[in-house]
Amino acid sequence: MVDKSLIRNFSIIAHIDHGKSTLADRILELTETVSSREMFDQYLDNMDLERERGITIKAHAVRVIYNCNLDGNQYIFNLIDTPGHVDFSYEVSRSLAACEGALLVVDATQGIQAQTLANVYLAFANNLEIIPVINKIDLKSARPDEVAEELGIFLEIDKNRILSVSAKTGEGVEEILDRIVIDIPPPGGEFDRHLQALIFDSEYDSYRGIVVFIRVVNGVIETGMKIKFMAENTVTTVEEVGILNPKMIKRDSLIAGEVGYIITGIKEIGNVTVGDTVTNAKEPADK
Image (cartoon, helix red, strand yellow):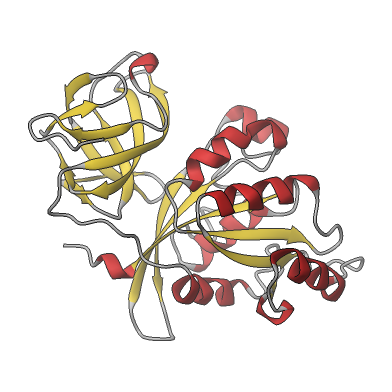
């Protein structure tokens, strides 16, 4: 069984073009989740519209394994990608609800922008641990010290706690991974309680129906289980459970604290509501 104390669930939040997707790429590369040969720019942005517009629209959850040199432990990081564009703040909020922490990425040449503020307030509303990161320090016009000063004042923290990196070159990114281990708490919840799983996203697959992305809050969800979508009062059976690494990998089950997907054969997108709770139909949770 997965040791919940070694799980870290987090998002990356940023103003558009501040380097959020590039940082996600470096994390996938550094943890060898995706090899350098396989890597293409903005790996998580795999929707056609995303790649066309150059911004992340759809939230994606990717599990990466990090071998931490600080304590020798192997950690499971669930990186829940979020849109950086102001038009998609609703998707940001639902992604953050599945996390305990967030990397706040700020461009060293631009500093705090309007969407930076909006994202921080969403993170605060979800009681997330924020790790501030100044990006693009490789640019000639970068002013990391000045941006660290304003970010420290805004977040009311010592500016020396703010990390400076280049997501493009990879400089400083490993230190971010260590800070995720240290600063972001492991998920709560208990595997022996009634199943409660938060739906933070979904997508339609023409062959298999709706793929539902979940964060298990309490209990266990497993293949063959009869489940209930509480808001829609829909009862169905789990046909497949798995994780994204970043491709779908089948598992027998997911336990409290884990992030992954389920497929139930539901074909109508209206039967799945983001923000809804999935529970065991035979032994439902209270909410």
